[in-house]
Length: 620
Ligand code: ADP
Image 1 (cartoon, rainbow, N blue to C red):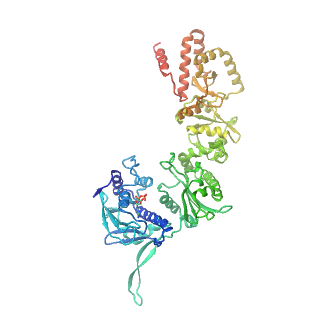
Image 2: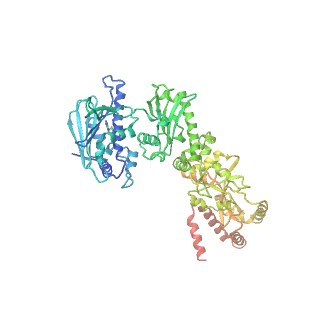
């Protein structure tokens, strides 16, 4: 006996001991494998006339032996294939177990451990197979736990036969149901109806004997599936469950999608689309490995598994299929990219997705927020990418956190809720919502009764800069030096104070040198100082560029302004020191600057000096 690799063993353990109630899905997995195997041979048959075109999947039930068999006349497996495909799970190398009790459902979704799911219902699985073109047949057999054996055998014709020997019944689980013909035929209809090859089973039925009152049993071979792809059916024929089953089996995502769209588009270009907005981003979604795309069909025949050109990057999360009779079947990938029809479909799809997202925002806010949580970053990227060519289409899909409610808000909602006298949209940037909440300037703006958009993602501010304004309302950072919130009177008062304190602020500017662009006075509630900026480069942008560690010859730096709270007792203290003790004033200036930098989330070079000063003050 050969032992399973450690990872396979753990998966098997999970399967065997799973409390996952949806054990029935194993059948769908076996049928899907059979269908894939036939697909492969179907492909060969295009060039090899020896292949028998009578493709089918046969299900056989044996009540006595408590055995269910799924056979196919697909490519089959060689002894090496058996070893490689069934001895280890495909992705075992990359499989990282996050938690001991990882949800089986998720595992199946992420790693496609399809075949092993048979062990949810089986105490023994036997796979008899013969590869197309080979003389030799083999049996792979395992009882799940330790390992498996591969034995030379005999088989008529090529293909694979998976024999599932059912577990003994347990309390609450009656495994006998898996050899009951009506139960199985319902399962096939439920999960595998659209499989392109006939799934057949011999059904035992009874009828009245001719010329007698007695009944007799007879068997009749029935095709259980309709073979019509979901998207080709009428919407009225389909239930939400059908759409979701198709999604789960096609995309291996067992979390219910947030929304699906089934559309028949007729016009300059005709197509049917079945689109899904997933609930969760795939594990590799934000990595380079991720490939977006929709499956492309021409009249029900698959042309391309993942056609990238059908989706813009910012809707890369959308999954689904597109079927159009306007495309030519034997079109090559290269030509397809240039295809006018394909471009027309892509343009139309993009519009459809936007309108559907807008609808969702209106009629299913909760799920829209979930979607934005998962995929908002790519939509935001779409809004600012390429100098914002798509900003008008995408701006109403964006959401940011409202400082007032701490909930997601759209720009339209923000503008609608604007107060009298408020003529700009305020935003504040920071690492986290909590940190933004602590910014002195945020406090000041909020005290006026105005809401502030909290931006915690790096792209956010770039997005707003690209949009420039929303419904004629400009965006304004609360860290902008000219926050300008007071009345005319207050402004005058502040100007007077600035003039009378110019000697002091000049002195502090000189002390801090290049670290700041200017030092000025402002009103700041309870905070002694804060940092703001002048010009185009904001404080947040400086941080973003620093984090990117680009080796630009000119580091991107914000023109920082140290603002001192004119209403705070600190001003009098500084004034006092200016008149009596310049050395101590210098230390105070440096300390206040460090404080302002830290509140803004900047790293500080001379933090050591700061602590020395604090220490000195403590023992004074
Ligand atoms: P997946 O189908 O996601 O690749 P499975 O664990 O279900 O993972 O199957 C592993 C591999 O075993 C398949 O990729 C395929 O190569 C092979 N296999 C499974 N069932 C069959 C079958 N009926 N005929 C031929 N090959 C099969």
